[in-house]
Figure 1 (cartoon, rainbow, N blue to C red):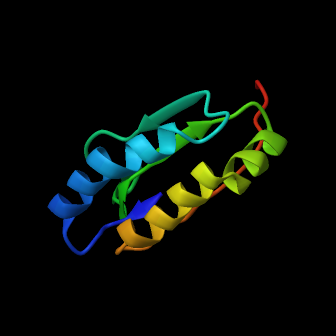
Figure 2 (cartoon, one colour; figure 1 turned 60 degrees about the vertical axis):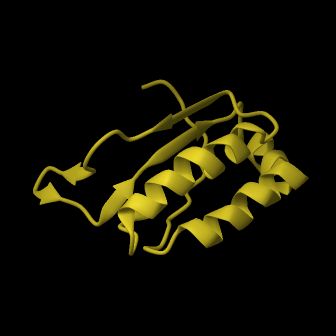
Figure 3 (cartoon, rainbow, N blue to C red; figure 1 turned 30 degrees about the vertical axis):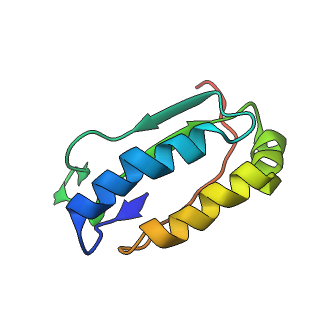
Length: 96
């Protein structure tokens, strides 16, 4: 979840042209979705500019992916890209 960057146009260009291709090379990514348009809360606007959801098989697959050279490259790019801050959350899911 990316906080609002200092320059949203530069963020959007970098994210689309550099970060997405890097992230798609990460071992084990099963799905990749990004928010489209404003990120809001039930009470109104949020402090987030973009939310990305990468899907993996399980927590072990996430750990293996981000330990790989491709995963490390994607994480390093996040540090360059996230001028508004970033929250990275990892979790297993289950059907409800």
